[in-house]
Length: 298
Length: 313
Image (cartoon, rainbow over all chains, first blue to last red; front, side):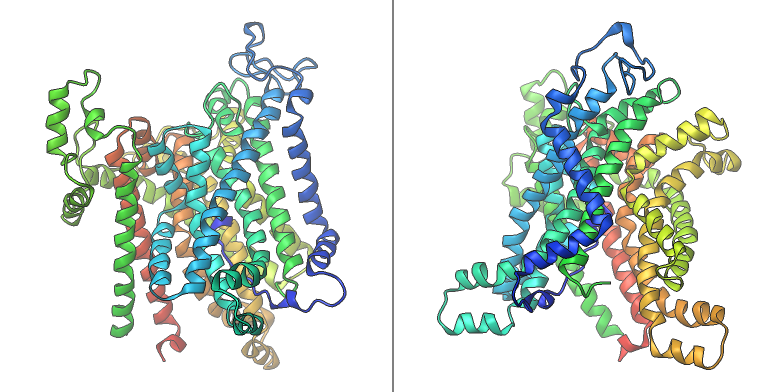
């Protein structure tokens, strides 16, 4: 949640001093040098592979119940133990990575698909359009992120798709604001003036000249927003507003685990640890990207 | 001052207007409408028609918005669709519980976050700085409902020191109240502490490089006085303003924390409302929180304005 709230408009001039190599390649080299960011990247890749190959790596069917193995402690057969109706916790954690990663990626795509164009218009066109968009953005930001997401998910109806829409829409104002601030900074640059002077149409200036230059801070924000979205999806699922049973999701696993914490603590440990690791790794990656893309930060 | 206040107030009005529009629009997302929900199982067409008329559901949308906002302006946030009680009453009834939780959480966050931020800024790049940053990252990445469950596991199940749930009013049993609230308050304060630590660290780093801090050192003041009296005082303003803005994080977190520890507060109200499909309550809660947030935002701005002479110029 916090990551979404902490918008720091990043100056981009530092990226324009390129000689020899492309800015992207230099940023990548700087990122490679940051050990914490690399750790984040490795964990993210680990979870992505786990989600893709879930059917192959999961030792059991994630929804198959077994009455002979209800809440059985971790053993060789069930490494992470089983849940209240005898489902394998490890398999459910593995399959649950799909819901979390999907929710993280899809909802941030929604936020960007809505927020970047709107922010671009606000910043580039200015005037009453900017006024209207900015007031609307203020209004959305006035509703606490998770509470807005809960309200939206409640009105749309509980499902993973609706949770992703709710989270995506709730996180949109952050992208509107960031894009707008960046565009305002970039549009007074000389190269934009030059593009205008040679007679480029407005849409071309906005898309070809301004947009690429506002992307780096948006990439940083998107990475941190994925972390926030993963927590948000887990929160909504924990409240029963996300992935619906019996499909596995880390948040809903914790919701049931809460009721059996005295008898089957393993039900609570692993899904929570997975959320923590995934969120941590996106946060590490985001912080690293910020340093790599904007060397003057810090 | 008056001019500034007037300007800020004028900027707030369109924001509040848009908030009400957003909240009103939520209703339009519903499959079916409030009348079919209130009509219950039978779905008697006569009852539905009557309710539609009573709730103005057969009017055009702008007119319905007019009716709704007229009520809101008169302190009428509507009626709970389930228990036929005024929504505002329900909110005010639950609010003190959440306020206590939030206040305790904020206190814990301040006590942990600000000293940690000071230490990590004054000893930048030391082991302490590194440790504080790691702890902050942990605080920001841990879902607070999971932390809540882990704490219940340790302190209630394993050690048996604290109750896992069961809220008691502080007026009935203060000790019992504190015992029930300390874990949720810590869980909620943990994430805010991490944010405060980061704010404090960056504010202190900026201030510690300022000329007047160098002057204070040059005068031969001991480091303690320089850090606590000269630097911290100036760094505190942005920290407090940013802290006020974490109100949203605090409330979002309270929803989950109250759910884990079964605390009958504001967050429980909205979650229960969601599951009872009591949309008037959901709308009321969202409107109430955002209005409080906007007002807090204004107060933070004013505080900033008052304590910072440069802003008055």
